[in-house]
Length: 93
Image 1 (cartoon, helix red, strand yellow):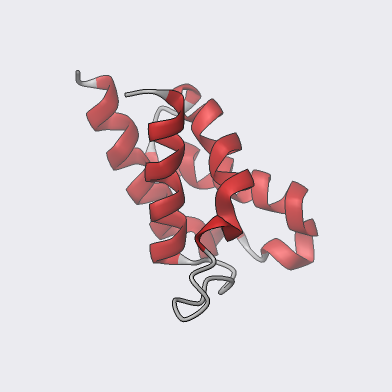
Image 2 (spheres, rainbow, N blue to C red; image 1 turned 45 degrees about the horizontal axis):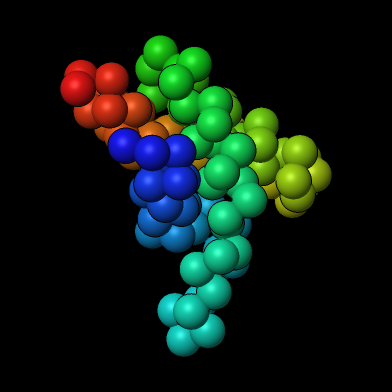
């Protein structure tokens, strides 16, 4: 899987979970999380658990949107679980 394909999968996860409620299907603003997805994808191979993935996503969102804007760590639990599923399946190949 190429880096751009991985970023697309991460983007899809972020849109589905939509931790900041930024995605609006009627506006088709799929690029809303593109920057964060690219950054997460670039660092995903460092994660060793769903919790690592959760923290990675949260830290990137804190940098992008501020601590208040990103919200609490637990908001990223589902993101972490899904990212870990993606990372695990990628590493199994």
